[in-house]
Length: 251
Image 1 (cartoon, rainbow, N blue to C red):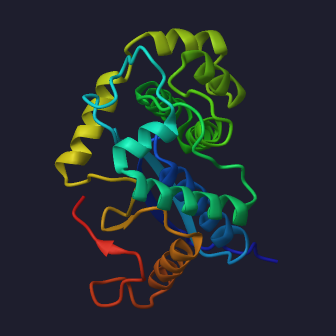
Image 2 (image 1 turned 180 degrees about the horizontal axis):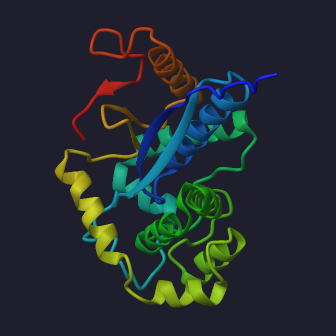
């Protein structure tokens, strides 16, 4: 009997622009990964996914200095930064999502610049691609948004790096105390702003379409189904038939 030929898979490149300081980015990352797993494991779509992490500095260092001598409380800082009404809405949405998903997401804890965390994520990507980078990113979000840890603290990040198999704790501390990849983080964040991005998360799909905000997994599933249909010879996404939440982009 002849072996069953392997089906051709379309590669979907997902460029995820995010900041670890951003709770919507945490939610968006969970929803995106849930959609990817559902499309692969349940729908068995003829797609494979390549994820690329692009760092973004959501809060200016003029407002939140890189080496702030104090550790601002996240709830107090956000209340002042976005205003009481917007903060209450954010808190309501986060609490609702956390209850629905059964995840202890909260806005408790401290808020710091996330350059070191972004540097570590880039290092993981260089060392092991998305296989190392994606679990590390999720672990950093978990530490910050669920455990209330300070992910600007090299000790915290070194523990995460070691647990995720990125590098040893000692190597991680040495890396974080250096300035390796600091310029790259700065340049990539500035490049995103130069292209008009002022808020995150933003997911760029195949360099053609963008999805902004912490969209639900259902939104991504519909987009991926559309791409799979296109791959099979059906209609492809264009300006007249884009799925909800998806827009054309030049980013």
